[in-house]
Image (cartoon, rainbow, N blue to C red; front, side, top):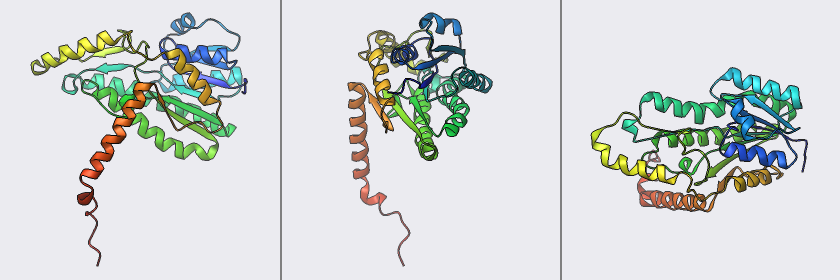
Length: 280
């Protein structure tokens, strides 16, 4: 294990980002822990010799550039970027405002793009690096009440799959992480926002959904500390996985998605295969 590795982690003020930062520090790595509020980051992560705390709102390009520059000035390199910062705008699509949808996409899709664009020149120069982006099982399949969140995660997956091909020749690895239900702070009032444009036709189902999501907070089966350790292990591999399904529930979701896709392709295989121009 190379203890000289430098980890840059977004959203390290609370939730899963805190666990990842602590695990990386415990493993002996140098860690740049970032967040919109550096007081929150400092409070969440004890001061350590190999720790640098930097203000970073992932939706602001200047913040991303400044965070990368501060990292290089302090540690000289960036080996692992963890795109972790996220939020959750929950609600039926029609009840979400366009502003809420934009905010979801800005934080969970455009934000990782902004930070990665700032980091890539450093990794290309090094001819090495590893970009880990935290997606979700909502990036594999979608559910009602999660349309904006899933749109951001499906977008993240499409972007990352293209990126992995583009940057592999520079010795840079990528990993998409699909966590299932982990006991993070994503479902707390600080991270979850609910649709605020109520439509009467949705009232009954909205009440059921709100009850489910609020009850799920703090009851999720996944242990974020164990996921953080799994990421340490993955980042140490010579050929890290392009995708890591995190949690038994995530494996179950992926298996169902694969089975459904196979059923759909087989159901209309003959019609789908008949759409080429007729051969002369």
